[in-house]
Image 1 (cartoon, rainbow, N blue to C red):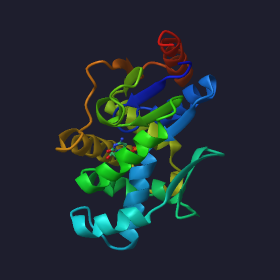
Image 2: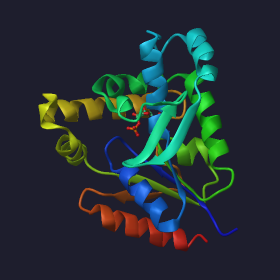
Image 3: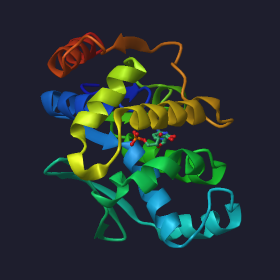
Image 4: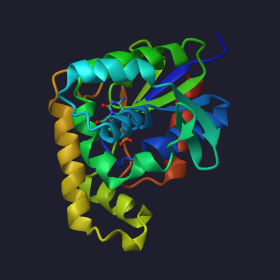
Length: 221
Ligand code: C5P
């Protein structure tokens, strides 16, 4: 075939979404941000005071959520039942709780099924935590994108509006905690797939990372 699927996994703040979006742009592929889908479920549950442990309530909620991804101004817009929640899912409240919802088997089952369907036609660049290991184990190219926790926290810190009242140390702590939860959960934990290529972006520019992945993708065609 003339198109492949590319999986980009790694810890929080490694630059996956920026890189994945740019790679998709270069190749004329579709970019899919699976983290945004976990965040959208988290936001929807929080609004109804549903916790990550309430399987029955989550099982009722999930089929009622129509999650739609669309190309937007800042990469990708995400809609839940036609409400644009692109900004809302980036709140600290969602960020702090998303890993608990992402540990729920009920949630993972529904979202990974949706993600597989989105990739059926190929030509997809999908970023997340379990894409290479679980969602798309047959992806032709798998990248595991990392960077030191200090570097990742610093990047996030620079992105934040200065009135957020959060310190670099706080951010570093929250990122490390999210990594720990994602790595230690029972279902589809964050782990490098055996056949993934590791790229440490600590000392690479975004353009360098993108160029490396685009070059690798050409070898798979
Ligand atoms: O990529 P992002 O940081 O927006 O992801 C938010 C959270 O969603 C992650 O910390 C993780 O808990 C969860 N996630 C996941 N599996 C994915 C993508 C995201 O568990 N494929």
